[in-house]
Image 1 (cartoon, rainbow, N blue to C red):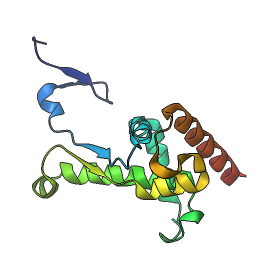
Image 2 (image 1 turned 90 degrees about the vertical axis):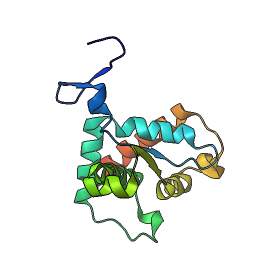
Image 3 (image 1 turned 30 degrees about the vertical axis):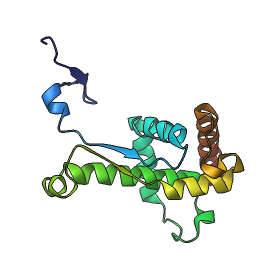
Image 4 (image 1 turned 135 degrees about the horizontal axis):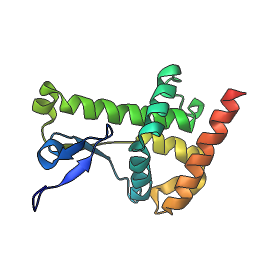
Length: 153
């Protein structure tokens, strides 16, 4: 490895050199005022491969409630939906046609449904005001664990 080159270890254990990494597509989440604390947590969770894989499997196994009946959506369903959209967007933009249409190596999507459901479940997150990322992470993980445990019963 020479000076100025970068190497990242891929999920298969192989190394990716700087030129390979330029093929990757990155998608962020739209910021609604001061929701960057949520976005950073959500993006971090998305990049935990076992969590993402299992949430996508969970999402695929469920019949989603109607879009206009958000109160029937669990936070796990909303998160699975968001992860599915991120994955589809990333995969589409990596395709040959997607590169021509989307262009570039990055973009963002709007997690409105997730935030609306989060605000319905916990008024502390209403109004798009700055909150603590750790409080959000604790709330999200507890809600996921409780919701999935309830479904298992």
